[in-house]
Structures are given as structure tokens and as C-alpha cells.
Image (cartoon, rainbow, N blue to C red; front, side, top):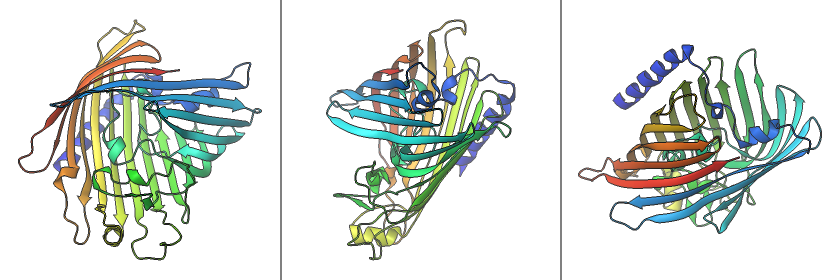
Length: 383
């Protein structure tokens, strides 16, 4: 409770101070898909992408070098109302995924109908995951364990904005997480992550609802409220069994703020799950009944504002737990209650090109356990 109170006080101070700020970082409002949807060129075909090459050096272990991802995005404009966006991702050189593939039909400037494989609008990084839009070589841990990034499913819905109310909105019906995904079950340190279907022959028997509101009425500030509600998807041969699926109610709050050379962001995610006791018994799993996490981050550009290049020094504190609550006979595993401190530099050589370095201190709530450190370096591009 003290940690949540501390987070609330800091976020409140950010919101109050933002009333005199300037929105100096365009990545608050634009990701690659938005860029492709709004870019006007002579050709109806628009190409974009991003990529990351990383080096991770944990304590007392070999380091790892990795072309973590290379992503190519293509947008095609059939006419003034109809557009298609697709994102092809190569992970670790050898793995290929379709991360987005959706058709958009614009009823007017403020209402757009969408259908296909889309990102679930939850938190910040799941939609804004290009490497130049966040600090740190690796994405925040909460966005891997709780949300989990990159979370995309097949669905239909509507997206748009109301400039009069300073609101951007999204609402979709999606297929949900898969209760048992091949040999993988839900739970443990990864929470719901193993259940992502990613649009690959996805099972659906109970559509799920996802939505988000973003408020942009104060210069320099973006506030987000997101929600996801439904149940996991069980295979036909077990969907009548007790414990074959789990109810999910996930709510997220996020804030992003810029004022000249200063920037800050924060995020809180809470997922309440139902029927986890029966699910764990049926699948020999260790799925918690509540997943919760939050982080706060502040950063400062060490170079003057009149320079194109930027050197951002940052620090981020994260607290996240995939066993925040448990049901039945499952014993809460304190190793899943984790804290990360990350601090480092993001050197933006040009808009769309960044070199990063940071150090992480990772710990958990197991009595007597020691914290571990990890040094990270990375190169990121976005175009």
C-alpha cells in the first residue's frame, strides 16, 4: 500500500506541473502504424520499420549479443477512406512473426473502423514499442510479465478521436488468451504471457473486450485509461471442464509528461483473475489470482534544446508481481514479487537513431535473496 501511495503522489505531482509544459516529444502521440496511416505521399505505398541490436551482460555469466528484432511495416492506401497496415517482424534472426495486419475504413476524420490482427491497447509500450520511444535497452519488465508486450490478437473495432474533448479512443472485440497453448500453461513468473495466440490459427469461443481512452487536453501531458475484460479460450475437447478457462479483468493507468528537457512517465496495471484454483488443479499450473505492477521513470536531456541530438539520462523503478494474490491451495511464490531499478543513457544521434546503455539491479521478495546486476547496451532505429 505504501508503494502505491508513493506512486500516486509522484504521478499527481507530474500531472499538476504539466499544466505549464510544452509537448516537446512527438512520440507521445505517434507510433509506426499511426505514421503510416497519416503519411501523405505521391505513391499509395508507404514503408517504415524499426530494429534493435542488443548486448546483455548479467553478473557471473556469459553475455549475449542479439539482433533482437528487425521489423518492416507497409501501409497501402486504396483510397481516401480505405487503408491497410501490416508489420512483419524478424526476431533473433531466425523467427518470423506477423505483428500487425489490419484494414482501416474511415467513416470520417474522427471515426475509423478496423479489423484484423491488432495491438491490444494496454499501457504504453504495447502500442509504443519502437526503440527510440522508450528509455532503456530492454522494455520495462512489467510490459513483459504483466501486460504482456507485444500483445496482439485478431479482432474488430473502432478507433478515433474527439478534439473537442481532447480524447483519443479505441474499442475492440478480440479473441482471448489461450488457456493451454501447445505445451505451455498460464502462470508462474510469466503470468498470462504464454497464452498469447498472435493470430496464428487462433482459437475463439468467448470474444473479449478491450478499450482505451487517452486524454491530451494539457500540453505536454498524455493520460491513458485502458481495460481488458473476458475469458481465456479453451480447446473444444476440454471447454466444458471445470477450470478449462479463466476470467480476466485487467485495468491500466498511464501517464507521459514532457517539459522542455525533462520527461517522465508512469504506469500501473492490475489484472484480477477468476477460477484460477480450478485452472491450476486441471493443468498443474501456478497461475495467480491477481497480477499487479507499476513503474515510475524520469529523464533529462543533458544537451541544449537547440541541438538536434539529444542525450537523455534516466532512472526507472519497477515493482511487479504475478502472484500478488493466489487462490485455493496455491502457495504464493515470493520470487514472483520483483523490483527492478534501471538507470542509464539514451543518445539520440538523429530523429530515429539511438544508442543506449544502462545498468539494472534486479531483486525479489524471497527472504535472504541477493539482488543481481545486469549491464546492457543497444542500438535502435525507427523510420
